[in-house]
Image (tube, rainbow, N blue to C red; front, top):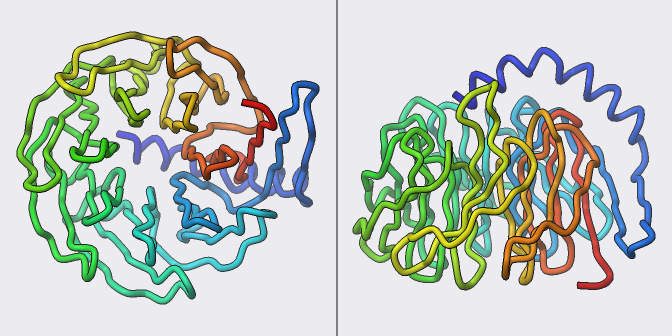
Amino acid sequence: MKSFVRQIQGLAIALLFVVGVLCVSFTRAKASPDSVSIEVFPVGPSPIGLAFDGANIWVADFFGNSVSKVRASDGVILGSYYVFEPFFVAWDGASIWVTNEIGKVTKFRGSDGALEATISLGSSQLGGILFDGTDIWVAGYAVGNAVFKLRVSDGAVLGTYGVGRQPYQLAFDGANIWVTNILDNTVSKLRARDGAQLFTAKAGPDPSGIVFDGRAIWVANSYPGWGRPARTITKLRLSDGVKLATATVGRNPQLLAFDGSHIWASNYYPDSTVVRLRASDGARQRTFTEGINPEGILFDGTSIWVAYYLSGTLCKITESTP
């Protein structure tokens, strides 16, 4: 399981973080010849999940036992709030929601970090979390083969819906919730208004990250085994989940982002790269190597942000041309 891997890696994180802070004690910015600006900010020992609130990046730091609010303009940390071993975060327009290792979802007020609610969904690791404009959705991962729908006002559970084994990440297409099921190599599509399962589609090996590009669904195929890491992401047709294309990225792709024209993939060990693909045809265009084990990735409307789990850093990639 991913959580077991993280525990093994934990022994190395403290040393790596110290080295990382020494190497990145000040914000590092560079401009490449092709008009790409890269800024790197130290944020904590093991950043994973990211969310954007319109002005700030929220970062879940697993071994740091916190979620931090980072000003997007300059990378300054505005506040850090305790959560035990957090994984992923979502923004609902006013509050930040955080999943963690022991089956809990925590809600903080975005303005000042005040604790608003703690919701228990079980006793094991939760996966991704998202806001669909009305409700909060949580992937159960190790808490049964289900996703949960929570009321945004107080976190009350509105529904629990069965999907495949080890549901991990979520995407929203404007009407439906898409869920990656790691152990089944599938993706489930649920109707958001009532949780009805519309169909289950085949993906690649160990589907992990998932994103909607406005026309199709993209899924990162992570790894079927330590000795045989996958290198692909799969494009699925929205209407029925039929596979439209397979694109090559780095080894062990984890999470995905869409910037309006391109799909971005974070590739874990052993590559530690971030790859940009053209959404129209999956053509690989750029590769970035700015840290160790990139995981969380998002687009804030201007820049791509990447959380480097074993570097303890947050990377901001800004391209001046499309």
